[in-house]
Length: 266
Ligand code: MG
Image 1 (cartoon, protein in one colour):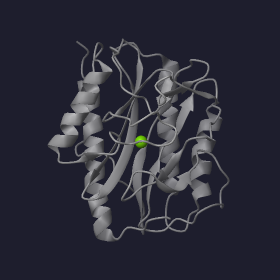
Image 2 (cartoon, protein in one colour; image 1 turned 120 degrees about the vertical axis):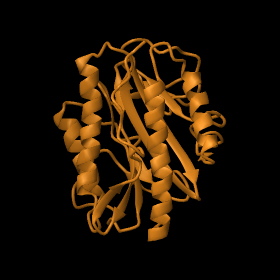
Image 3 (cartoon, rainbow, N blue to C red; image 1 turned 90 degrees about the horizontal axis):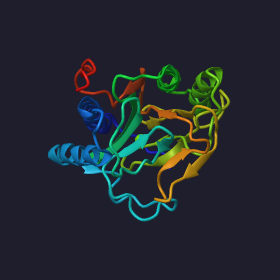
């Protein structure tokens, strides 16, 4: 079933989304070379609970996971890309980190992800991976409006990823979102324009292009959660929750204030 939110509910979703975007921005600003992934998880926990929000992840127990996730944020480093379970690991200069966060406030969920490079050493190939997923997300948002089809969004994403030279994995993509984190419809990261679900004002979509540098094949860690590239290549993932409105797409998961300049690394 696809949920259609009324205007008051979209405003509630926007408050949840702003909190997601702000927490991700604040976490990014705190991350340094040497930060432990479990520290990021504890910071996320404090930020979520201080805001009176509920984590969508802690008790999340889908068929593919091994028991509840048990953490407040997904942390995926380098070859890890999706469902990255935090563990004791200190980030190194040049690591490519993805943070993925979903929470609920006022009964409405929002979900977003960012990828960024830790420390001053930046591999241009990693920058290209990140920039491509960001550009694919922008392209998808640009075509999201009432009466567009889901295939238009998928095609916009797939065109950017393919023309940048990346192979697309179709096992995991975006999703409807609303009173719960994962809902219909599925938002594939490639597809045919003019096909699929017709978009309507009041739909919330979590759109999430992700890529692996030289493969489309995933492998799962022994933790039953973390998905990484089969070849060990690096990966990137960018996600926003948007609302379809009469005027087009409204991005809900932007931070409350403009992103601050990247901090100097200690
Ligand atoms: Mg997400």
